[in-house]
Image (tube, rainbow, N blue to C red; front, side, top):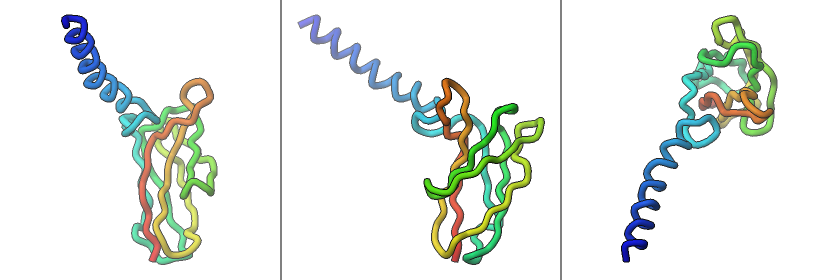
Length: 120
C-alpha cells in the first residue's frame, strides 16, 4: 500500500512540475523568450504591403519569418536584437499567421514570437 501512495505522490509531482518546465522553453508550449513580432498596419486591405517589427531576438542569429506555414524568408537584426525593416505583401483577403524562428541550439528552429494579420 505504501508503494502505491509513494508512486501516486511521485506521479502527482511529475504532472505538476514537468508541464511548467516545458512551457518555459521555446518550442515547448507558450514562448517565454521575450521576443515580439508585430505586423502593421493591421488590419490591411488585401494585396497590400505591410511591415514587420519586433525586438528581443538573440543577436548574431538570423531570424526566419514564416507566413501561414508556407512562405518563408530571412530577416536581419540590429545590434540590440530588433528586426531590421521588413516588408511583405498579402496575397489576398484572409487571416495570416506570421511566426518568427531562430536557430538557437543544435540546429533546431525555435519559435520566438508569433502574430496574426487580417487582410480584408
